Amino acid sequence: MSTHIRVARDAGVGTITIDRRERFNSLDVATAQDFRKAGLPGIGRESSLKQVVHRIVHSIRAHGEDHGYFRTSLVALGLLLLQTTFVPFLSFSGYGPDLLLIWVVYIAIRRGQVEAAVAGFLIGVLQDVTTTQFFGLAALAKTVAGFAAGYFFNENKTGLTLGTYRFALIIFLASLIHNILYYMIFFQGTEVSLVAATLQYSVLTGVYTSVLGFLPVFVFARKHSLT
Image (cartoon, rainbow, N blue to C red):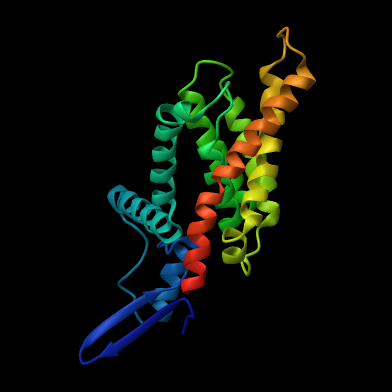
């Protein structure tokens, strides 16, 4: 009997469990063969486009719910709204925190380099859409910053990292990488001193962002202590 298809019967009720997560439980040829091995010859591949679309939509939804992608997207949209409407009031002399970068670093600590780089790219594109200059620059900078922050990913120490000063320190390092890359390109062709302006904006914005990053540190520290 196949190890991917399990059939259980209890008081006249049958339960079929499909365990082929690497293929999103799709009803392909291999799965159809497993059904027959399990004694269920009547079940096979999709026979219509409607079934294929239903399976794909269901798989995407299940995968998104299992990994929290929908919640991540909603949080990113909320932070983007705050970044464009509220954060300007917190800025001084043009220096302000980057809420979206804090979220990218959080994803890096929770899920690693690849997901943080993808999230950084998508969040950066959203940020680029709200601006009219250098489209793609925020996406590039946040992709690199997310990948760099993912270097500190350790699934056994996630709670410890998020609940201590380490999180704020990682935010500062990722912010430096992000800002240096961003402003080195942003200030190209201007009359200001490229190196001086880049370092000034990078350090001050990085400090501001990392200080704000202590707020979630307190939340995670309290949550970690309660558990």
